[in-house]
Length: 607
Image (cartoon, rainbow, N blue to C red; front, side, top):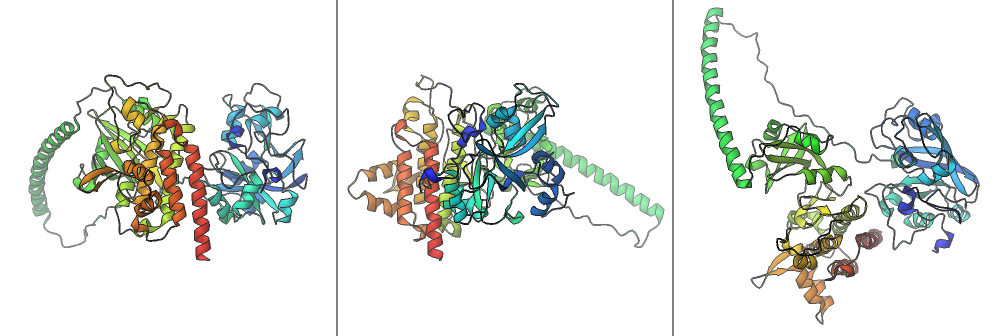
């Protein structure tokens, strides 16, 4: 399918910036080009509700959509208050204006802090663009009360699309966890038609968060196709049963009762005083032992130290941490210095640390990605820090791969999705925050799995900016991280670049394919999995040897061709020279193709 006949060209990240030009012709960094069969048509947008735009009235005012139509198509009443991040279908009249399609609305600037960029990407959630706003409005500086004309991204079907049954085009803002496949499936569109609509090559469909794609529809979209993105965690209150005393039973003499009551009270008071003394003594002993174990000293920190790192950080009292972990009970220990516990009705993971955490907390509060672990809060007590994270039900990838009886372990698609999740997390870390960061300790211990076996990267204690120069090995340098995942250039020279994460990802990929640990025993010797694979590659019967290494737990529930492609991908990540390795964008693209082919293979097999 040649790109020449595509509905539009995908804008990529260009639509998020303000430096585009269309002097030589229409640019996808502005809006969608007028190349449809009609100059005007009914179109649809997807908007995610968020205060103050969380009702029919406020969303219709923002987009100039008819409130009655808006309520009807979303199957809600005019008075409904929507939950945060709930997708809302917005029907608009899309018309050709000059060289671009657009749905017109207006916006009154509420504060002097607003910019063209923030209005396009934050207020309108990338449904408009900074370039088109600047072109539509003559004002070079913005101020509160100014009325802006806002063109929204929409398009009308081409004649080819109409012949193929497309009646409407929906403008969809890509979310972090999205892929062409899941967007197509959710809106009942073929991946081929979505690829055509956006000028994609199906073999290379990288899409970026906060950019828009067009989804061809044969019928109007339905509220049943919408979802809530990143819903708040469910709240489950802890209920303590209380036994009520029936006061209507037999009564004893008032004076006898008072006398007995006073006696019992004195005994109870004495007992609790004794228990409090013993508990305090035990607590001090335990804290001293734990500090000794952590090797930490008592630091004299300024008051509100954690708040000074990030004012928005939830700061827990130490007593809450103690209660949640049942006084750091061994049965609440998940491994190392990580405990689980319930805080405010939510099950969370609590990591105890003896070192300064300001850099790690600062990074974790800046990143926001589905495939990176979420920091919920922190606590500091006597120089010891406790970081509170979302709880991951299935533990680490390393632990999961060792559960040979787990039925989902035998499903190839789960492993592909886990690999893609880790790759997407690294792609975000390397490319979508400024400055870019290197994790430095990617390994199967630091990949955690939630209840749906979606993967998130954890443990950012070694992460550092990729912009810092550290290319030469100093006399004080020593490698820090998980040895069997370390790239050669880091081991030899201390060179820290995103390429070291890609090397480590290659080892994790091998673990997913083979089911073996990064270091395993063979002939009573420790063998590095990466070295074993690279050695096999140099042999005469490399292909047969590699096939034998595929995890037997899969029991034939996979395509040998796809497994070989995954193996080749991991080897390409393990190239000795950093410049010979794939970029993480290339890794994601390659994995998306493998995932798409695996899903097609499964659909063909099931039919």
